[in-house]
Amino acid sequence: MTTQKRVLVTGGAGYIGSHTVVELIENGYECVIVDNLCNSSYDSVARLEILTKHHIPFYKVDLCDHDGLEKVFQEHNIDSVIHFAGLKAVGESTQIPLTYYHNNILGTLVLLELMQKYHVEKFVFSSSATVYGDATRFPDMIPIPEECPLGPTNPYGQTKLGIENILRDLYNSQKDIWKVAILRYFNPIGAHPSGLIGEDPLGIPNNLLPYMAQVAVGRREKLYVFGNDYDSRDGTPIRDYIHVVDLAKGHIASLKYLDAIDQKTGICREWNLGSGTGSTVLEVYRAFCDASGIEIPYEITGRRAGDVLNLTAKPDRATKELKWKTELDVSIACKDLWKWATENPFGYQLNGISATFGT
Ligand code: NAD
Ligand code: WQD
Image (cartoon, rainbow, N blue to C red; front, side, top):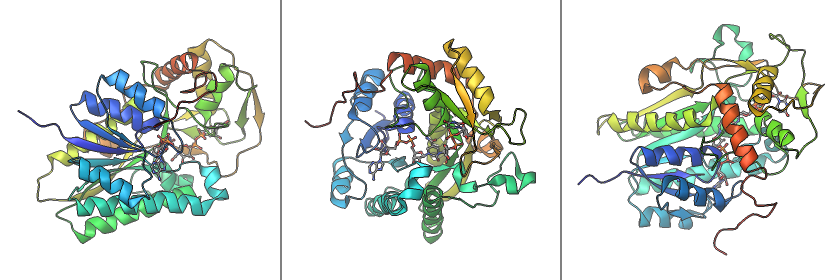
């Protein structure tokens, strides 16, 4: 009898975490989710159980709560951890930096300390292309390889770089023990093709696709395009948009890569997860209008502070080493997002009322 490997998924109720849980279960892993639900709801976990036809143990625990988190390690034989939990809004991080440093850095430290105590040494970390900052200052490095110099330009990005540094230091202290995958995501978009799980931002969406979807379902009046005076094909900035299901599969590839490494050898390595293809804001706008059949009203406004011209990945390292590459393009992501948006116009809430966990 083979025993299934059990993966602790922090932030598993959130957007990328929930999609990754589906792929993990489809690949024969068992999952335990820890999430404090500060940016998600238990409904996503309930939907995951319907989608996967599996019971998924769930703990409403904050990662900074050492004792609460230790209980999870005591109750489950954890084989590896995929660490999604964290605050992620760039603009908000400039307003409340201490909250971001506290939540993201301390939460990760508590988690790593418990992993060390319970001898769980395989770790996959959600990093971000934001660690590169304005990569256009190195024109020879677009598309961006992992070797591109790092330089985040906001507190959120600093927390990602800080955690990356902690992981590199930890690995260097015990090179034969730690197996760490640092995954730098570019711009995740779309939703699961089932329409059961997707992105459900609280308040006004910061990101392009969720904002556009809310205009399309009538929750907002129009899209504001932040500037058309960039040096690109149509004047709008270029990003590497990646379907969230492809991204989720990248986690399985990296976990399998870590699993395949000799037991007495460690690793700490960075991989870009992107498609390698850049799209402008107006190209994505067109793809979403086509997918939805709706001509979404929009207005060109001024540039958003902190935006850069081009963030496109060079994903060759992941292709070569993880045997992973994207398979779903922007038009498929828009189609899947539209299914999610039309079937769940208020996200996981029903008519504006959200379910709560444990009451
Ligand atoms: P999300 O907000 O949907 O998911 C994060 C989850 O973590 C949420 O469910 C939230 O409730 C939980 N959480 C936050 N702090 C916690 C804490 N202290 N203890 C327990 N749970 C906590 O975000 P996402 O888009 O799914 O992002 C997942 C990860 O990927 C994050 O670390 C994010 O920084 C990173 N990332 C996201 C993007 C993106 O564009 N979505 C891009 C690059 C990297
Ligand atoms: C994409 C493009 C905007 C909204 C962010 C984080 C990054 C990573 C991914 C976590 C830009 C334009 C947007 C709108 C617009 N997250 N836009 N109108 O800024 O590339 O990346 O998410 O790690 O760290 O910064 O994504 O979706 O906000 O913007 O015109 O209402 O869409 O100017 O060019 P971004 P985004």
